[in-house]
Length: 273
Image (cartoon, rainbow, N blue to C red; front, side, top):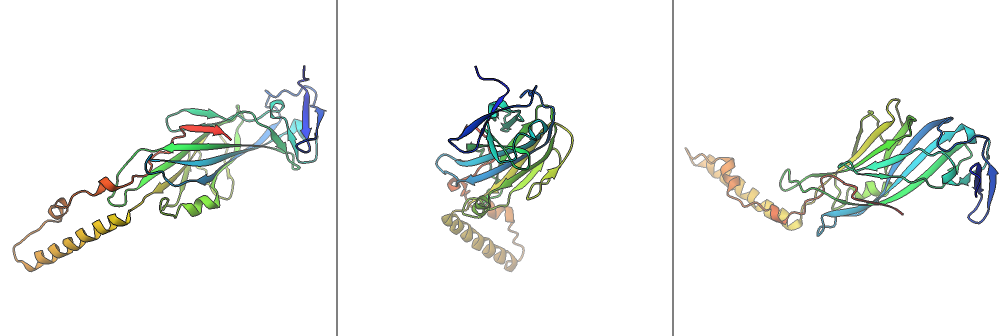
């Protein structure tokens, strides 16, 4: 039976040594845990799949924290057995309230004394169709993440996009800049957002998407010409009042050809890679 107070330090994939944990170390005890930080990185984002009204992406969740009990364990960047050290609990929530809990994983003790854990998830999202302004039907996609810290307060968090994802936002599908918000008034970006308070913190990344087909542009230009023509005629014919609403109602709705993009990014499927 393995000693619960033994931890394996792996200096490489093939070389591990066993060291004794500090006397009385308990992986269920958060004594000495400080500076819990998290970063959620949207690593990549594929284009919309029109036939299925869905898209896929990859989310990496980084957790950093300091365990004072392990401060003198090693001074090298070393892999630790995740089942033997305390880790913050973190869950990914979708907007329906369904949760996917991050499992304990192998962690890394950094030279700075911080401990780092990383988990990657592939997400497939289906979104609600919502038409707003024809022809540019704007839709919002959301990633909703809530962290729970084992009664230990998070001290910093950030939610960022990979540069490649930002670039893809301006292709034929993703054409609007992302925005972020949270229940702790955190400002997401390059800098960590500092806050004190609740152990339950949510942060949400939203990005808009819209697409207009080339053939739809042709369908729009012609009615605009007609509107201009009737407007000119109404000016030239005394006593003839042609209301704009009447003109618009004469043109059929072309929205049947639209590919409506996604409203809410639900994490229906989340699996560890």
